[in-house]
Image (cartoon, rainbow, N blue to C red; front, side):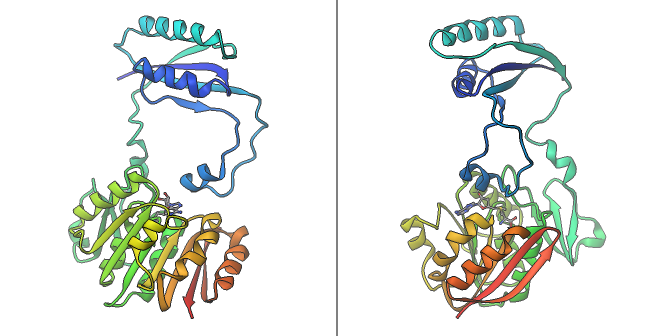
Length: 317
Ligand SMILES: C[S@@+](CC[C@H](N)C(=O)[O-])C[C@H]1O[C@@H](n2cnc3c(N)ncnc32)[C@H](O)[C@@H]1O
């Protein structure tokens, strides 16, 4: 199916209201392009630590939206223009010029799947839930993954660094906490490596849903892996729910800027002698995370590197 694509030039001041006006007209999934720098919160959610240099914010925003080929685009555009005229009476909406083009059918949500195929990390087979296990792989340790919109296919260096460290320290008694569980990959693999119980937390509700779905595909029950939504850094309720002095391992594959405030908090959830495995650290921030780990009174055991990413493993004294 072909789509009609519309790119509307407006101002950053008007981008939010114009987008919600389009959505109120029944237009789904608008994309906004502008040069406003990302906030710290945006970066944490998007897992980006270094950004390409971008030009200075010029106040211009482009809003792109799509209509199916059979939709009456003239009628929709007429309504869009009427709404833009109304908005322009009290807001600078800029030129409001709409550029029109056509595009081939694209499955916006699932398009990335063409880049995710089964692969192994050491002897563990990570396989998208839509692919089949080959007969020769049936005896391997297998984890089925569909991250949905959450992070965690296992392909990222930081996830691989964490997986190897978790494997090294898991015992049959291990109670593990995975802060920022994403797809649930670390908590599920910990169980496959023999851990007794996993707990995961994430800020993102999509991560919680993705983890539950992946657990089901992998035959992991909610007694084995408990998932909670919330920010353990400053939410006392989630801290209480997660429990204190309870974990043999805490894994956190999150950006350095989150790990730094997280580290002193984690101390109270780890058992004495417990292992703290961090990843998600871009090499420029290695020192800052090491300092935070030492300042919390933990002993650094190992530093791992893969590409430009770093993992710090430490022990609570
Ligand atoms: C890089 S992903 C890691 C996903 C998965 N654990 C992995 O290793 O592939 C980081 C996750 O941390 C979550 N996150 C960021 N800040 C957090 C916080 N303060 N508490 C819990 N989760 C957080 C994000 O929503 C995201 O799902």
